[in-house]
Image (tube, rainbow, N blue to C red; front, side):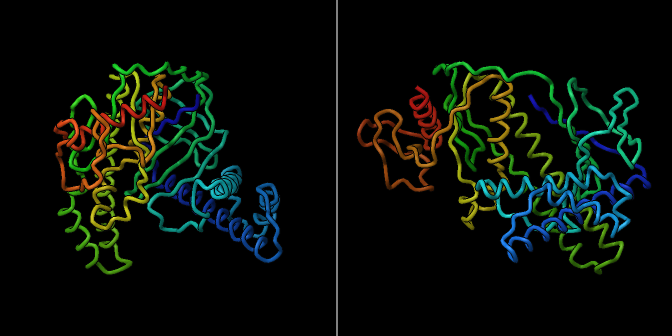
Length: 366
């Protein structure tokens, strides 16, 4: 089973320069390959494969000698990333590949092999860069695959290593109704469980909005190209990064607890891309990060051998009585409670949705 481990990197100033060279050269090769591929297709209807592009790379390095200053395999890996991006596009999983910007918030390059990890010394040795200091907060056992060096807009560096640990994911057992929990994601409460528990929404972006607005105004007043503007930009980036880190930590803790305490989980497949088109709720939905949370539940259930059940977006949920099945079509978002006219049950809208998600998911699984 493949696992990814991410660690904090602490490069020296000279190593930061070498990393910047790798980032720039890999970005250049990616954009060069994308332009070549698009031109060949539009002009002659020819679809260049990744092997065609890789075969032209040595001639490009002779034409541009500064490309030889970085790891050759990292340049080849940029072409592989482009090929994978086109594959995802043709399979309908992503948008069409676009050119990479020089000042993107997050930049990275991949080293597929020939690197060495030393847990005792707390270092990693990368080709053409040398030995870098790493904070290994945990160790791993297995076969190391590729590693990726990441530079974020805050000026932080990270090392992401893919490891094959040799284990097979456990086979999930059939869901047991008494040990299955339905989860309804919301905005007033982040998650409402079919057990009646309601998890508060921390709203990290909303809480930091006032501070973020102050920092953004200061940035807007700085002269472009000045050192003070760059300092102000870093403060804005660090504020955003703190919000993202807080949200990620909250989601990890909640998803781990739900997977640990239940044998099976039932959720609703949300169309987040469509939901953020609502101008009134777009910021709140983005702040919640439902897509990332569902991804965490998916891989953690797989690793733990638990079952994750999903129902469709248009399956009955909050508008359907979980007792008798009556559907209240005129229920609006403002109605947080409603009474079923058929059976007389008084429903909490979100709790009723969580119970329905569990019932419909179990019915579909059976």
